[in-house]
Length: 396
Image (cartoon, rainbow, N blue to C red; front, top):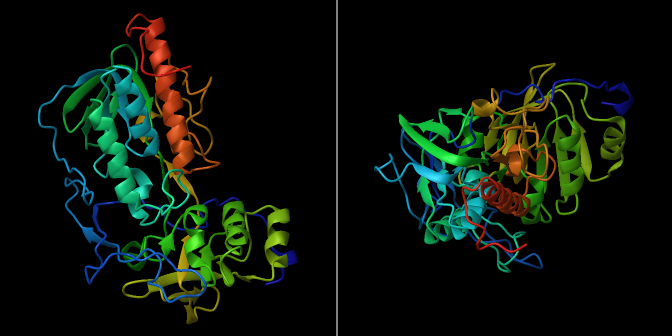
């Protein structure tokens, strides 16, 4: 389709159905079908295992926690303390970094980690852009280390989803599985969930060639032919970014017009390494152990065809996990929490950090930095209220 025929649209989700939660009721097995470990791509065109090794997602009961390979697993609250000076909601890099800082400051943090703890890094087998790991590290292994470090300093971590909160007065309260937790301050670090196509094959191959983060995973597709799904600026930014690594990028959009800005549409069409396919929907991701291709549907003619590729990036947006806070905290037009000063929310004593507020960077390292900021801000606020002593483990 000629780019001059494209019209801008207002559907930010590319017309796809948003997934309620990228983890859903799934457990993660990083052993693969043959039990072998994933192998990172080699240099100089050496033969390598496909990206992400063997990760598979297995149906689990909704009440069952996701198992972290090599790390602690937890179920229902076993009756530990339910009060802390800081209540942290979320257990990705932001939440667990906040827990490390808060615990070292003797703030007795309780982390309500969710029934699928660890955040989106639990679906990433190789993390190579986080400082301190020159050989890279598995996402679940990384989050296990975060967790163990937080627990080492006294954080209490409970793998439960928060059903509702009451931020009307101190101590603030949160309920999870019928248990009330209380804190003199709250750090919200619930993150944002990528929107997916809601295909069984897509879920099965997440982390095995299917990704929602070009910045995180593009490196693994050097010299390979891949596809990006989406029609907004984010999709086109990711497609252009991925041309640094891939031999060819196919941009797939189920409609004949894009929501993206004209400058991004022009940049995409002008890039010789990008092929644009409009009126094209993904019906199935092909492959057993890893992505091998796509089954595509022409949304105008109804014709189907297969496209051989080795990687699929979904770029149809993110949904911040803010439902339980919308009646209490300010949110923007996309549902992200709005900071008022530094990490402060509009309610004194309630702080926000990580991807639940950041829809620009969405990186593990920026989320971790946000968690540290929120914990330091919470500590200073508690000191100003006479709740915490001024002898702390943090330095400023």
